[in-house]
Length: 84
Image (cartoon, rainbow, N blue to C red; front, side):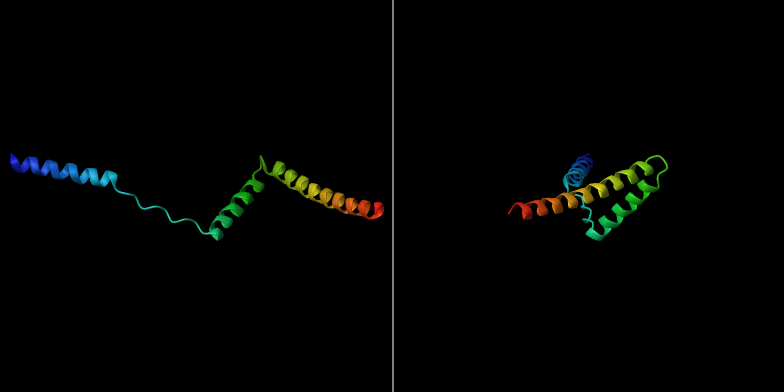
């Protein structure tokens, strides 16, 4: 009977230690791996028959916005040169 009590106490201690112990943390992903996963996800979205065209249209809009920003900066510089 005493041995049974010691065994159950030992089991309780072991279970408590196992529950409170720190789990091994996953290693952080390397920047190259993150970039590769992102590129794969972007390719999957662009190839998607439902959303692919919308994503491509957004890409074109972003390119057009960059071109407009560059043109505005150029024209602002020209205006500044003229008004000096």
